[in-house]
Length: 222
Image 1 (tube, one colour):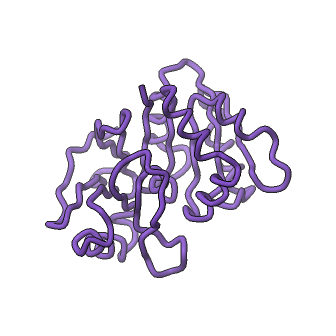
Image 2: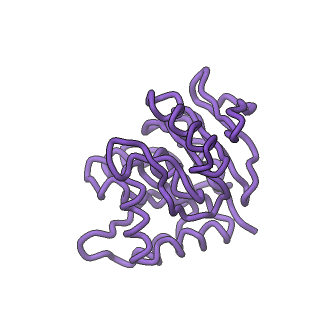
Image 3: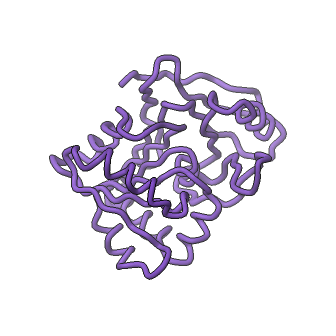
């Protein structure tokens, strides 16, 4: 049985969405592993993570893949929740594949663990997505992890070019149909099935996108 994935359109540290992510583990004190690869292991991102999680009911840690990694696959495998930062999705995927992190993430998910991430790592779980990983002009990612079928677009209401670029790419077949999330909204999957959309801001939601356009999805406020 596969676990849960929380694909977040965009958010901020210390948010209700992060509280919800911890609740999904179903444990009194889950082990949370932060994976800041998309942000090039920026120390500021790591510090923000610990500031947000050290006072929550969890045991936080992080894994670095630059320099001399210290048992990264074992540390990921022991986590109840793996939380991935925003940043450059394409770079993160390339580094993960070199180190075998892509397989470790799948194993966490398949043993009923929780995977989550915002922006770049709302994207990574899908087959494809719209991304700025290759430069300021948005384009398809081309090679996501494929845990979830179809495509994804974060920041649907947060960046002016995201919505029209994604809609056009799905309309003309450049990207397969998929899902989009506003900033402060997230899609919860159990296994590969979308179970609900949650939001920490009034008006933020998610959408099913096909060649015919966008369809708002029912959203629950946190």
